[in-house]
Image (cartoon, rainbow, N blue to C red; front, side, top):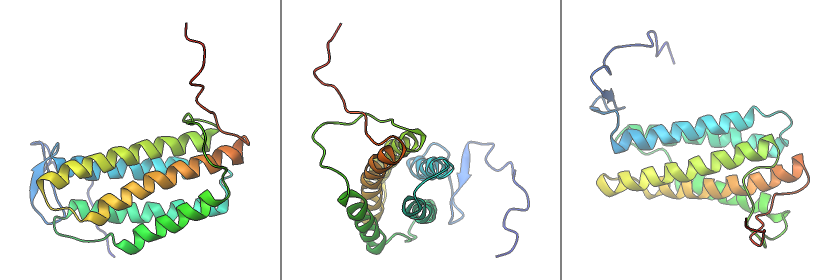
Length: 185
């Protein structure tokens, strides 16, 4: 692939703009940059989750594939008109979601984000996935965004919720249930 980043700083963004993948420039706080920046933040959160020792192999493998797909998704958002996410990737997330969810007991109460380090990191990634989805929806009201991008982020947040449940059991054997009838002081 060659040496793509020979210099890290270019000074071209000092005026408050950034370059998109098609060579055009846009404000750093544009809806497009907010969308792909939040996807990048999500990918970093998944990386933090992957850094937790002792993840089950199936979870680890799933999340590594998610990281690659998120990088592709960010590229799609960074290059107007580019397509990188397909229905096949959305379907893969659905298969993973179904497979991990199959062994879990049905939810009868809301659960609190937390548990062990991996479950907590997974919940954080889930909330960032939801924010990324909101940023993409905002962008889609202004510019063309492929529907697969929004569907991918929606399924990913669902998958991360299920994985947080799996990891809570793996780490502690249980989830923290919301006590809606707790005594109020």
